[in-house]
Length: 474
View 1: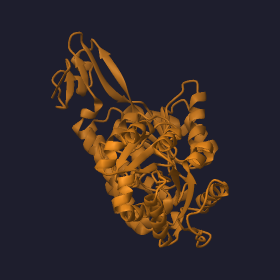
View 2 (view 1 turned 30 degrees about the vertical axis):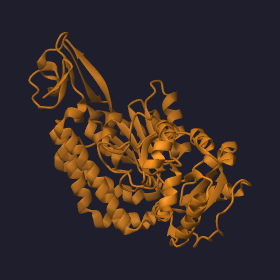
View 3 (view 1 turned 120 degrees about the vertical axis):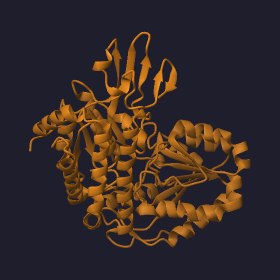
View 4 (view 1 turned 45 degrees about the vertical axis):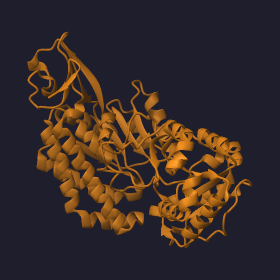
């Protein structure tokens, strides 16, 4: 089917879908979740065959996917997310309304939670936007099976038949979707190269549109002296598990571990290496990702400023890999931008800094990140407040005494950050605040109640929280 026809269908469906009451949209999201759950066994089997991910991980990801759908259903049933504002004198009223048809690109590393019925799709549908999904070729069959679940929910709930559509294809297809005049926004999780290309397509349009792209991160972790002195062994075990989790194929994988040159940091490095050496080899999602990982790791090891804390462990076979560590100095990292680049996979670079000034300079040299973490005692925090100050400017999520892997689906979550972690640091792709990517504020001036959306009517028929004459009320 031609992209033009698909986008015309999305636009036609949008004209109906945007006016469907929130309670019915919520029931639709819940029905999608139920249909996915009913197909769990088939979906897990297909995804396992296509991605090498274990059944436990895939089952957990299905739960995450259905949880996201339920969270957005609950959000729109409650209704206050529309941020209704009313000034009675003069009669001016404002709320958030959907932007139009949205294009969602499936992610390679999350066949469920960031793909066909993942967070981008769920948040767009909750907002009142229609969705065209471009399935990822790494799990094409899984994507189609999930789309079948969505289609069943569409029929069950009486939604417009083209509320969600599914396409496959190469980068030409992706470009055609982005540049089509009916496309109002784009959601993408993937590489920096891919995200930049989509942004360029969107910017070249006669009417540019936003691309909400999440493009990776090295997720720097700072280990402060007292924390290392008191619990280096515990931290080594924690971060070995985080680095190796899912063969390192998470955008929040801790790729840069920073500390002051000291016996405690040296001991931590040795303990971390020993913990990683006990990690079993793991298969990566597909050969292309494994090849990119091996090449990125080789480029890292080729730098004269980089050493190996222990003898390298050979990879298991053509599909599986073992975690690896590299070691450098703060001065070398400051002098060589290549050392600040992401190696997507189970790999981390340890950075020995000579003093606090160099450590802060290392942090300031980094580009925008999804996360940054600090391992610290109360005593450390009292003496190293500057680290937190820099981290706030660096990333969308700052973690104290925990690894960055494990992104909770909740209202307070921020899964975003300054460029190039994402294209717009004001938004998140995880959590219920993700809905704000697919809406825009619309102001109604001097309108009679009969012509206003329910959320803005004087009687407040939906009983939502609103800001009326600068006072929150319901």
